[in-house]
Length: 414
Image (cartoon, rainbow, N blue to C red):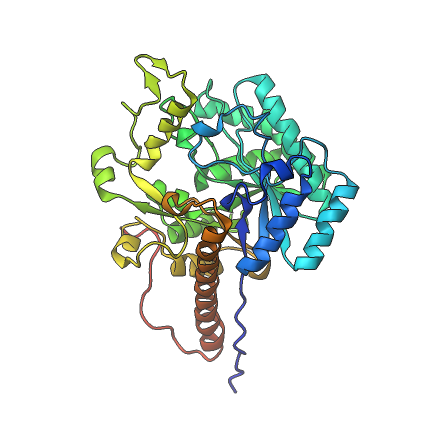
């Protein structure tokens, strides 16, 4: 007798990165009262219908080594750590979490942890340690950030530098009971040099190489990936093939978090420059010298923006041909592939909406609220559709021996 399987779809929680609105709390209010910014973001997230936030931390503008005008996307120090985060501050934030019902999924600090200048590197590492200490006090299990790249060394030499310079950060995470989730953005605009990949943890084969170094040093459980499909599209990849590759190599466990941000590739830009991006006459150089004007350094990002533009989920046109050409994210298959190929606890993996669509990056709360609310709602419904398909096909039909129709998107197909 056939035993039916119940229809029980499992959904992912949906959240938002607080960098979506850098100055939700005006600086004249938040600088003297830093935790007010966190409280107000938790309340705003509740208003948006989010389950959680990814709490953005950054060096205060008065302490940052990169001028704001040189950045493609301004960084938000929603979490202000000029003064250490102590138990009294944690008590206040935890009370806001209880009041709003909005969780903190992780604490994020995106910076170059392998910076070639030892003093700058130390400054960034010290700040990351403060971020870790904050995560512990808030009961959060992970921090999220980059690895970075030592610009004075080759990629192979960076593997050595990773073992010597980055593994100690992972040991610090281990000592605190945390994992360190690495976003895979190649960060092409970090430098006016011509390197495109300035965050060495940019692709699955590198994740595996780095994880093997971590295992050798007893911190393999601390090194995880915070996957962002926008960066895959930037490099000509697609989610299903990447997840299949990880599954085939025995690394389906390595993805532990997700950003929900797309990339819309401009076919004309690819025709002009290819997927390496623009590397000459960008405007970040003055003759044969790097420009001394910080605003000019933002032009280094033309290595990326000349061929694509970030997408806030739900704001780009539905384009099946672009999905097939890996020129934008197929969100439904993205969520299906995660369930079919990764070794993850779906119910505890937040989908963090990251807002970097330039034309919609309005910094007025009243104008931004419906934009973010719509994107979060889109993300939630896409995940629910994928959850329904997965439960129906892989559980209900499978239990009754009923085949699934059709072929579907296939990995490694060109």
